[in-house]
Length: 468
Ligand SMILES: Cc1ncc(COP(=O)(O)O)c(C=O)c1O
Image (cartoon, rainbow, N blue to C red; front, top):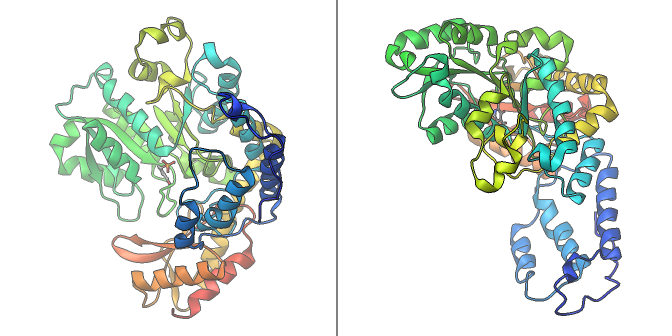
């Protein structure tokens, strides 16, 4: 895709401090033309191959003291930068956690940008807060949280997990706990951001070791029995609703039971997998989530919204407000009332109204479309699993619960998976990466894009028949 050639119509006059704030009609046409072309693509290319040396050369000296034509700069982006970026929204992107933002969410995100919509407080942004809360309500309802639940959108699951665990730590005394060093019960499959959050906050993990990727009653009991001192210092339990590596939903009810017995905070990390709750046949997997004190779900993952957006929801958002509200005289005007301001519910202050793209898309598309799109990811994972089961040289590690498939390719080490990945990328057939399962290197396919077809999956699986 190339930028259309058109030139700036009005030469900006030197020494006019507002010159860069005037709307240049040619630039408007140029950018809208590019965006329209991108949005109209039937399938985003995998990309990610671009020439890095050429990119460095093209960027040299681009930013100087004087102006440049927008076409020239956009051409640098299109010709040298864009191709080096993997399209996470390609239906052939099966690595990490893919993205598949709806057109409605992408378009409304442009409104959020063009209108400089922030969502800090009711005083500043009542309409934005209202819309974001409506989107949060859909998620809280899906989990069965009480009507009093509320929260905010943060930049990602990592930021959500950190903010929630800070509330768990700082409100522990209100639940009758006085740990010497606060500990959090986590599983060995919890997302890496949980470990980071604990390190940042000076808390320690009590790790429950799983045998099949799932945090179970047995795994929890073993961990509690093995380290009674850590167990006596717990402030929270973290359950994962869709592990990132294998898409496994922990036994949330078991985690909730332990949390209730010990007056611990229950945090559910559904950053990737929480959206599975929308599919009625999968809903029982999430039983117990209704007891969560806090929960994270990423719209930029399986809720089909643009980067960067994570929903952080608390059972009692007033507890979060006690912990996260920033105290400054210039902010007094937004406090001093019963308003639950988004800025007061996480570690942030100024924030883009990043939940509005989801709100718009939920309303425009309706929830049935979301249920079908999430289900499509699970069904394509089931298809991939059934094909793998029929292969001679490839073995399924575990039947997928959600939309991630792990497999072993006979005789392959990490290097074998890497060469396979590079081959598929070079062909632009797919982007895949390997992972490990209890120390053993494995192949991993993460599905999420509803436009991924069985033919695309076949192409990837057929490529496992030979060595690279
Ligand atoms: C379960 C889980 N938690 C947390 C995260 C971190 O989310 P983010 O990358 O949005 O910070 C991820 C990311 O994949 C995840 O899968």
